[in-house]
View 1 (cartoon, one colour):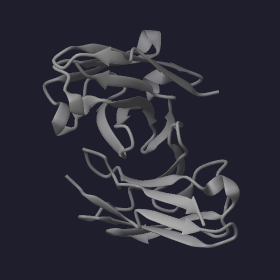
View 2 (tube, chains in turn orange, red):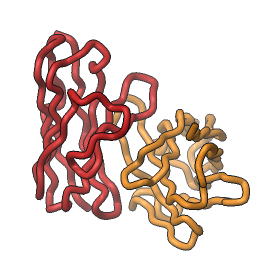
View 3 (tube, helix red, strand yellow):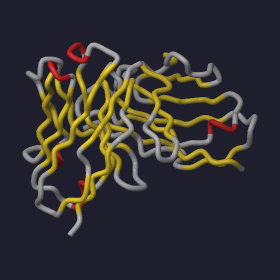
View 4 (cartoon, helix red, strand yellow):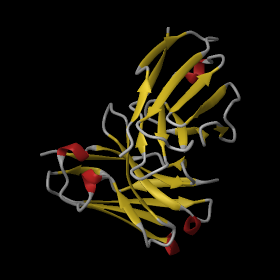
Length: 116
Length: 107
C-alpha cells in the first residue's frame, strides 16, 4: 500500500524556521518526482514546490522562493521541506504528494501555525 | 502563471441529481487537467487526470471532459458520499495551480 506520512509541523513565531518530513512507503520512492502542497485554514489548495527524482531540479511557487528549500533522501525514502523566515501567511496544513502528474497520492498533512 | 477559474464556488443539490462543475484556464493547458475531491479534515483524492481519464477505483458516475481552456466535471447521479469540495488543477506548467474550489452541499 502506498503511504505518505508527514511530520514536523507545529507552532512557530514569525521569522522562525521549521523542517517538515515526509516518509514514503509502498512504492519505489526514487522513481517519482514529489511535491509539497499547502492549504491555509478554510482556504483552497496551493502547490508549493516539487523536486525531481534525483534531486537535481527543484521548483517553487514565487511566494516561498528564497525562504523554503525542498530536498529528498532516496536512501531513506524521505522528502523534506526546510522553511525559513516564516510568515503569518505560511500558516497551513502541508501535504506531501507523489507526482505522477498529477498528484495521485497524498499524505494526511501536518499543520504549521505561524503566530506570536 | 496560469490562472484557474472554477464555477460555481458553491452548489446545493439533492441525492440523485446530476451536477456539473466548470474550470477555465487563463491559457491552453493541453488537457493537463486534474480533478480532486476533498472531504473535511482529509487530504484531497484524485478523481480524474488528463481531463477525462478516471483514476482507478473512482466510480464511473464521475466524468471529466473538455479541451483547450475549458473543462468540466460531471457527477451523473449524486450519492450521499459525494458531498464534498472539488478542485481542478492544471499541471501543464509550473507553478501548478488550482481552482478556488466548489463546495457541494446537500439541498
